[in-house]
Length: 217
Image (cartoon, rainbow, N blue to C red; front, top):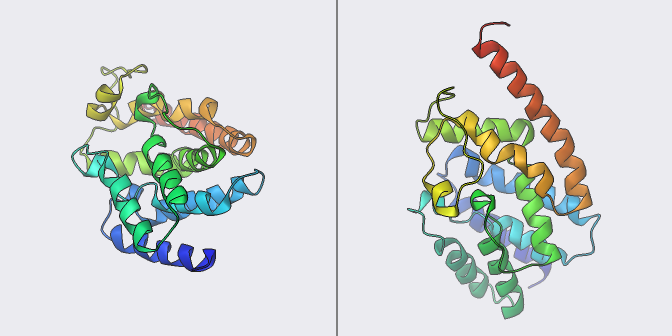
């Protein structure tokens, strides 16, 4: 099977698996991350096949929607790739990307590193910021029935992985607990460049949000 056929089959598989997914983690999220990854990879010396597969399969079974089980995603990806007779080396690399891509409170120490992981991680993080990031944050907050904002609940910016997973604070807090921190955590030069612009948009959004919240606009 050539690369084009494998990617086409992977896209079909992911679309089917995420057919009923929450709006911020559905096929369209995957598609945006995939496009971001291709954009970054174009400026990077990396294995494009691994980047493509990593981007397409990185959220195939997000632990947030599987009772916190972080093993389902890697297992699902591995079984699919094995069924397509992908080499063991590529499969393991893609699994490593899935296991190490998540933010997890910002204190998660990656147990694996590669330029392909850097590319896919940047691509995923770009989809968490900017206009799309704002929309996804409030979509997920609504999905979890969280408050938009509560001035009496301060953001916690140095959570452990477990604290981050259990956090149920208002959506605005998420900007300070994760989204506004991502610009400085990008791996690639292209990722940093795109993140800077999206970061500025979020700052503008928050300024407008607080002005409207206080009734001065």
